[in-house]
Image (cartoon, rainbow over all chains, first blue to last red):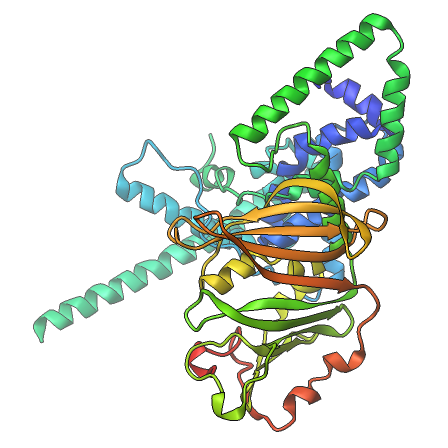
Length: 202
Length: 323
């Protein structure tokens, strides 16, 4: 069934479950990805995704159609996430429970560059999880969910200027964290080389 | 032009979603809403030509779906979801939302290094109460005499209790040792999803093949059936062993579901061997009244026990401690 976005929105506003089924099929994976980037826990992200659609169904008749279906769902997902944070004892301790997630390979790079890229991605993932929630959410919606600034501001219900300043500050904090990580790694490598050199003299 | 960090951010990937996630999300639509839309569809198809086109489209969709089932894995994630997947998703959702329940049954005992023992059965008892904890016991159906106490390896019989604060108690059946540890993350996961406790095909495979991830159970089919005189919808699931354990059996499960409540009445698991022989390896029945609070009292496990407090560890005792 291929309805246009406009047709889908009209049918959603009428409360048609067929239209909602199509919305689920089109968007459940991207909602899961967004929530996973927020919490870094597969099972929790799946629970929150299901809760998002449950909340979306309940608020179907109040869907005004002013935003796209996608931003409507993402904003519900953000509210579901905030509610979980409020109710959970773990608050900011979203420890990465899912490890070993591989990103897309860098086909144009040589092996050393690929390793560097992979290391940078792992560090970026860790650094992203270490950011305060408002910056993390803004970066996830903009870079990973590919929303425009205006859409991010609708989803997060903050002014456009706030989105831009969070993007700027979030990237700055990420860069600081990554520079520190690189400096620590350089120190470790230096220490390892010194040890190797000393062992050779024994 | 984007910076290096921005490029890496945009390429950060997420893991694949759980296989049943789409079904779970679709199950948030109430059944009454689906039914009313179905009757609206049939009411609208009054025009003869439109009706013929609808019938033709339905036949083509059914044929395509049949091909999809034959040619791909049984659990289809096509846009049109077959009815048994939707019904099973309702059961998964109903079970997931339980805040207390108890299931009792039996399973074939496993050997020290995995594998099913041929003749010995163990009794199973699991109780869950979101406010009180999770209790699980497995002990021999025939209690051995003291001088026939099984020694060496993991006899697989124990009592286990986890409390909502994450404290975990484990006492092997014929041992005075009580291991206490802490695992709040496991409590968080299990307490939110009672179903995860029950549909342990992966756990069943892990019993046969120690420390394996096992295959995820796939819904194969459903049919109407009877469990001890009660009408039930029977869902058949199949969990295959991992490819590096070719001699291990697949596990076929029959889940008997009450059509009125969508809750499971009973479950039977069968080991299906390479030569197509089958044997019953597990069966249990479910009780949805609130379990006795005494089941969740750690004092009963402490009686006469040598306490090993390992709360600095993340999870449970090492195998070498289990007798």
